[in-house]
Image (cartoon, rainbow, N blue to C red):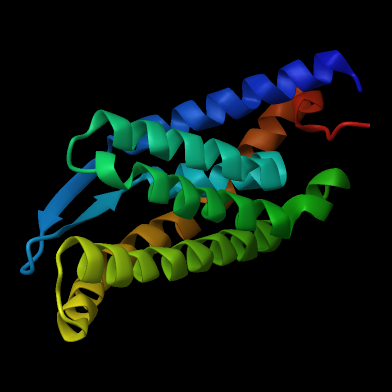
Length: 193
């Protein structure tokens, strides 16, 4: 194993986790009728970007960055472990779709767009399941219809957040990769040999 490469990969992982953490602060929190809340946030861009840049290990960056943000906000601290799983799955699934293209250095806009879509879908399946079972039924003690209403109320913000990630993450990724190539720093993105 090339130790220089491992150090670079670790540094890039830390940088992406920091971007996810910071992206969570770009947030508008809205209360919902059932005593819960939803957010419009830019963090999903950086979660998908982690997968697009790092491949499957980007799930670790998106999970850690989101978990650390939850630990700094009393509203979200009790859900930090779930956030690690759901946001980590977003970066992981995004990275799995582009893994081969990253190895071959042939990432296209459409592959990045598809990967971002897969990451968003994976996240929202887990997020809505968490909203229904954990937040609705367990934490708030709602009956099943009330928990479903909670899920339904979160759909508009989720669609917005997913759309923003789909619009922003693929072109940002391609621009970053091109900038790294021009500056001869694209070795940071290479996989271990």
